[in-house]
Image (cartoon, rainbow, N blue to C red; front, top):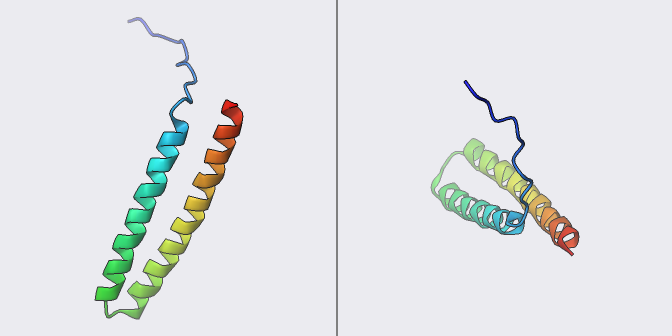
Length: 75
């Protein structure tokens, strides 16, 4: 059996696009969670959704920071 031990090349050319897609997906998830929160009667579920959306906001900030880093590194 032959193994290929060559590492894959480090291709970061589409990182900004991938990060932007992750931001869009996260925003869509937040919006869906907000809609479901409006339909629930449980205070516990509302609190859990609010906490999860806060973590999503933090992730979005991190993604945006990574985009800035990638753009700066590409120049």
